Image (cartoon, rainbow, N blue to C red; front, side, top):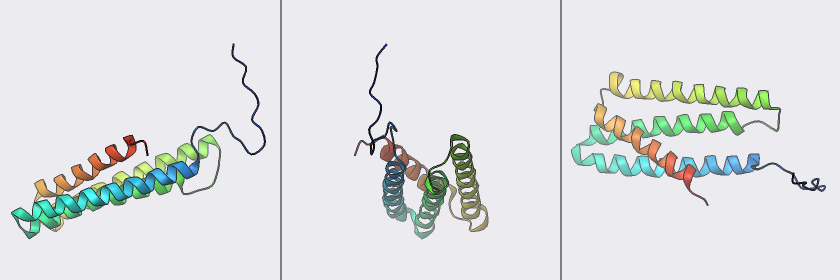
Length: 135
């Protein structure tokens, strides 16, 4: 059995702070925006509609991730049940926004589905890389 000293005033045993989560959310938003813009510019090779489709798909995913982060890190320090509720609410909002964004882009605005999905996939890949990076 290993005995660890009690935390001193001004120190905490928390592994990650809310500030670290907020910094991660900002890093993810920047990475997703860059990936979305790069994908939209690449899709312009196939025409304006393809570029707009990639932009719409990527922005839907980026906006959804921002809402999930706001739900998870938007409040102050709270108990575990409240934090779990915020996380679940943020995740539900994310997928509602993503689903509606993809529906609008493909069904209502008639943008090319492969381009829309390429933008969403690029933003998701950027999310994965931003979350896995150590800085």
